[in-house]
Image 1 (tube, protein in one colour):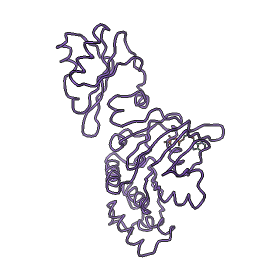
Image 2: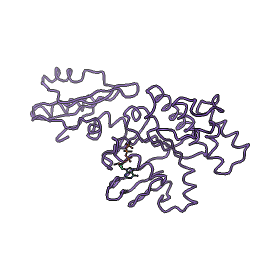
Image 3: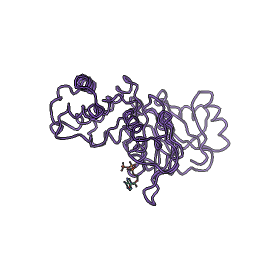
Image 4: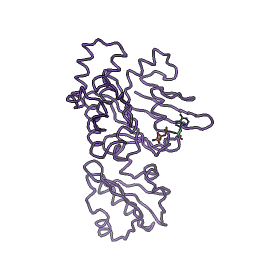
Length: 321
Ligand SMILES: Nc1ncnc2c1ncn2[C@@H]1O[C@H](COP(=O)(O)OP(=O)(O)OP(=O)(O)O)[C@@H](O)[C@H]1O
């Protein structure tokens, strides 16, 4: 659906996107996470050409974004709705007028606009606020208006730039579940740029971790948390794990087995001692998952690997993580 290949972008001398490659699939909720300044927003804004990119290619449904003429760009933007951290609503206009704006720009009839805005108000759950001004509404309600406005032209993709960063945790949850509903009901592809771990855990099926303009890792969100990958550790500032001598094995605890006493049972059954090098189990949606690195003498490694294989437990030998 969206294919980003070898994209480089510069602001003057400063390179802010470095050889970025990503494939975003139709219908998925894809997260782009990283610290401030990582280049997330810039990348997102290159997709709808709010920013230009100097090198590489961005294809949206097989159209090269940087080659579009004015008319084609207008049509592309119709397909790509966008929402922002601070909502970008017009304060002097009512909720209805804010949502109607893109429809007016595209010349729809008054009667269609009435009908469409009512549908959208219903979809985002703020029908009762139709004639209010945004200043009388909460942050969550304002973001619902912004979502309705972004969906007005029936886009195929919704670009979300830190859409929940200005909201409290409960409102964040409700906006995320609204986005999830919209994704399911309407089949819209969603790209979420965020620095909030909870956001990607809650709704993104796949994520890219960015730092310094580069994509460090791309993968299935659950797998990244399960394996506690290097990119994820970098993101949370726990990058360096000092591996002791001997064999180091990372045991994965997917949600189905995270509460089992694998290590103590294995130690007892094999009569081998282990030391625990590093591990983290954490809440992921309604479950707990994670991994644990254990250290053992080299001569015991084969026995342990066989044991884990036989029990169907996922593991990886860590040589230099
Ligand atoms: N218009 C601009 N002119 C010059 N430099 C810019 C411009 N916009 C962004 N930058 C720089 O580009 C880099 C990437 O910024 P970007 O906003 O994409 O990062 P981000 O990961 O989205 O972070 P944040 O969440 O803080 O916005 C930063 O170093 C930023 O200072």
